[in-house]
Image (cartoon, rainbow, N blue to C red):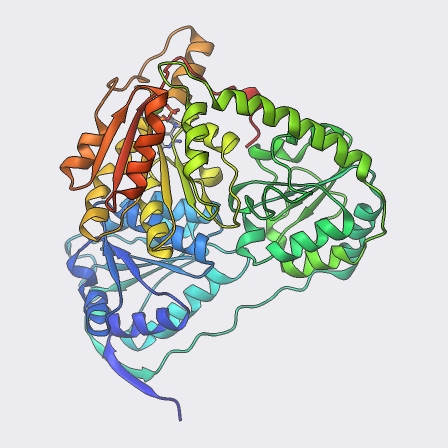
Length: 539
Ligand SMILES: Cc1ncc(C[n+]2csc(CCOP(=O)(O)OP(=O)(O)O)c2C)c(N)n1
Ligand SMILES: [Mg+2]
């Protein structure tokens, strides 16, 4: 007979979440969710708390993205949930299996005007894969299981459950929850064979691999396919680092040349969105590899679009190796890559004052370990990071993804530090982006979660100011306080930091930052005249 457990709604919810691999919660307090805290407290389950609910959801998203298992945010009823909505939406756009467990005003007197009485479901239903209210305490484990199965089933994404007050606080006896299976979708063999034949027959193929390759555990299969078919690989999102930079088929800086010259573009595990020119690659044929049928684009018609488990798809493609000689094509791209690398090296050595963002990354590259987790939250400053930093380990790069939500930074940093207590965690913040979440440095300090924060402080919302000037000849609502001492903010919150105005001081500042053992902010005064050249940016 199944083992039974007896407890309140919080105990049952946490037992179910644990069974699915959840290992901590991110939260901000509210009476509606006390039973979840009580359950955690009773069982030594880690609780990390924050200063704004968005950071809790972003932290849960970071652990989900980095560890490929569910991340949990616990939000109190009403404003706790509404403050988490940007985080949930990001998780949706990023295919991250985040579970939000929320409080909810009591059901038995619904309509009488209890504190924070609002029906969350219409707010979260459009941005989650699964959203439900749990009707009775005894149904909690089943509800959590259904939510997490939805979140973990490709295409992955967030799920939401709220527990009315009396459901959370009442008790029930149930079977001890166990995790159910996550379905694996076999790709259609005909569609897969069509994609394989196209790859085998192409003269100048290119693979662009994105986040779902990492989240689907398909990094090894990607490498197998690339090597078997001798196809150059470019990456974006969590796909970055899938092939180490020194791999003969790893390319990064020659993407324009590659996409312009390719006769076949295979986009794996990432949508055909603005980051990829909406999937329009001139005369090249297009193959789209997706982890679920609904991920197929409706705005372009690929020559083949196998849908299913990306490990099966990519290793299936490897079987189509023909021994074709692609060395001419690879040599062309390697030459373009070398040329861009030389240009970048020059830019990264810039000795000008104010400091150019390129130089910041030139110095950071010297100190970042191969497995450092780098996180970008900002405008131009982060676009430069994408250009100049080369993640060497899969799953070590966190950007906000196609939803492009500023404010992910401190939450992502918390999730990264919790995931990797011993790796370097480096958060790159625009000065504008810093304003959304810097107060959560307090959460990091208090919970002993040191990270290095580098602010590209140009005193403006650069990614908006420059385009607005270009468009109208003037700009409004695009200035910030120049030279603001974000490092002193971090100092006041219990961390440390310094301001750097000269390029020669960067190396020392970064060394001190990584040695500090507390959240440390290097406030780099960068050149406000420096605008990221958008036209050349596909990332
Ligand atoms: C929540 C949110 N609000 C507004 C925007 C629009 N936006 C995109 S980039 C940007 C400017 C970012 O400025 P900063 O972080 O200082 O970076 P910089 O471009 O100056 O390097 C803004 C306001 C957004 N993407 N997300
Ligand atoms: Mg700025």
